[in-house]
Amino acid sequence: MDRKQAEAMILPTFLREYEGVPDRLRKARESSDYQEIRGLAHKLKGVCPYLGADALLAQAGALEWRIREEATALAEEIDRFCEAVQAALDAVRQLL
Image 1 (cartoon, rainbow, N blue to C red):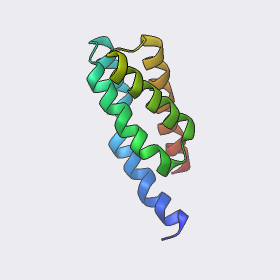
Image 2: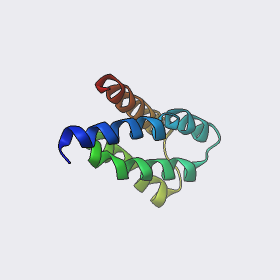
Image 3: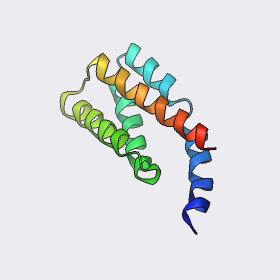
Image 4: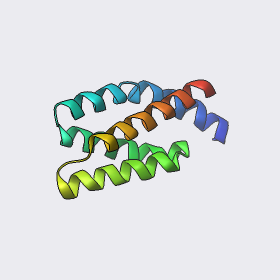
């Protein structure tokens, strides 16, 4: 399978599976559900290498680590992560 074929499969799947993540992150932040945020960061961390999204990968890893170690995260940090996820979704949408 060449790169274009892989992108043709991965990108639509990413959009379909992660479209609601920014809203889920916002709701989880509002209710202080840090385990939900950590789980979403972990899931995104797993898919980022397939997208070549190194900055989002680093951000997801840092957020996941903070919550695992401190059981909390700053609202601004969560908001920045949410914005980065939305930017990745928008970028993928433009590619399709």
